[in-house]
Picture 1 (cartoon, helix red, strand yellow):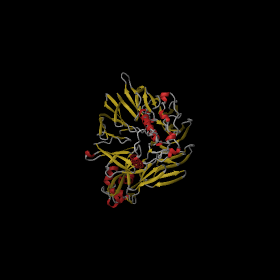
Picture 2 (spheres, helix red, strand yellow):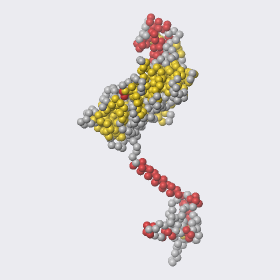
Picture 3 (spheres, helix red, strand yellow):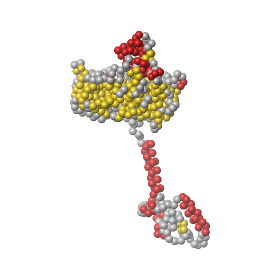
Picture 4 (cartoon, one colour):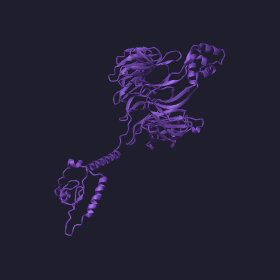
Length: 640
């Protein structure tokens, strides 16, 4: 009997293996019987590479192997044992790995090495882009997360409210002694020559800096080219806000709207009607315009000299994160105003009703629209919105059904109790009162976010307020006459709907924090409660928490102080663990889960030490005798 050294097949006779074709007489590997390289000190020649035909050769399946094995066993039972003195030629099989075995082994090795590298290699801490600011020895200082403290200028009480940071967080502007200054991080401060000036603000691309300057009792808006320092007067005005894109600079005044060419500052057009800016997209300006003494407001789009009315009767709206707005247009039926009033105040009432003859109002049924990236989209009819999260531009939407006009009456005495006897504006006041007090049935139906409607579950509490949205998570407070049924409702966006994730009973609270990983932090009690128990999704975290300063970061960590006013300890909650970071901390500001700053008491020294807490590094003091610590960014999240 022969046995193939490659595949192990046994057969009787000479010639190549009937299974794999290998001829043992020609392919026998004598190197198996030679000393190893370690024994001789020499390296043997490497075995020949596989031929392509061998790599592509068909391999029998397990079922074929089983059948072949049975057949071989039966043949071997029929073969007589070799007679005494007759030597059976048996070759020791040599194991060789197939290609798929090599590839699989290599893949496993790569995964193991990667796991070791990921697990053992230190991760880079998530540092914030925006700098922090602090006051030291009556000097305003700036601290970038990737740099050292730098002096800005003399600190004057309240000047932190004037701080502006460029979109790339590398330029800073502020007001110092009625002079606007700007400085690139690592550079020198440059003063704006017009004085006195205030309210600096960077353009959306960081190319320009705008500020107000007062000249001969007249206020004017100035544009400063950040690169060249060139200063240009836009025009005399009192302004509240402005929008710009590649070509337009729109400035909102007390009494109207002015639009300029962004580069030449030539006035394109002016609107003397009371207006409110909504946004500017692709050279089109979107704004709300008041039409009459009844408070009728329309939504307009204008490019160049052409104006287009988009919505005819806007009754409300909220800003949309990233630009744009959610808008409500009244689409209810028009009905006579006087016919809705009940005169219960005698002759004065008769006079009011007579004056209102011929005027009409609409049943306050509204449709919800979204203006986003220059596109106005109808989201739904018979919808109203309330309780929105301004940080992300999200809101709750209700389906509303209004009582029929013929069944509805409003006593004049109730209206006077709210607005008084101002006969000059009585029609406007009555219209406002009716729009608010019209009897209706409403059902909380949607979360509105990113220009989309997400359906809420049927069992969601119907009295939701104090909405917060973080990532795919949402939460709001629910107050009930039965305080045991009050609490925080938590939901998560999954596809086109919101799925309930839990309800946490807590009485009399609207102060809480929601993180992007679905953690809700809250406590029981409202108002000026100073110390108490902090909860995470129903579980107490600590009982001695300073409830006036709990902060969360956009990447899902929570920082808080525990202990007492004599010695507060700064703690961080991340990945479900509470970690004590530093003792004797009176103030702090949390940027990311890996980076925070704190003011730490220093024994025997006045003021505080500015403590940098960066994950993976030892805490370090970067400044002494610090008075206060603050951020200029509006996205700092704290308990309201």
